[in-house]
Image (cartoon, rainbow, N blue to C red; front, top):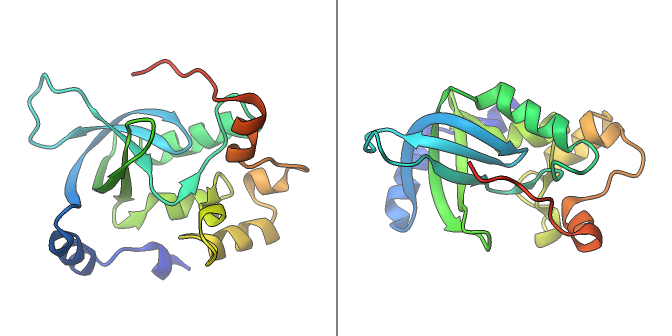
Length: 170
């Protein structure tokens, strides 16, 4: 399982650079908003530059006002806060966040979040189970994290029922 979660630096960087629209960078995580959003002070940026807001690609973590939301946020913070990460920006979402693949010490952060039971894979968007469908299945079988909670509600369903939680911007 760890092999699936680990990026091969040369391979993914070469693929990113060939893609053209993907931006690879690194920096230090300064803040974690919730279980799938973090802020990075990009290496080489001006000291006055605001940290870059990143949404982890391929996962959906509980809203902070939702059951398991605080635990997901805390897990992500323990994993990345004040640590150097590598990231590749692949898109921008409807909330104006850069959607990115994020790695710490070569390990895929989103994969770790799903494997530990702190987020769902983006399976609802794709027929193939999403980027981390197999990890989600394993976390559910092991009843890890939010998957141990009876009646855990996917964030997209929660947002339809209750709207988004208000988050103070960093």
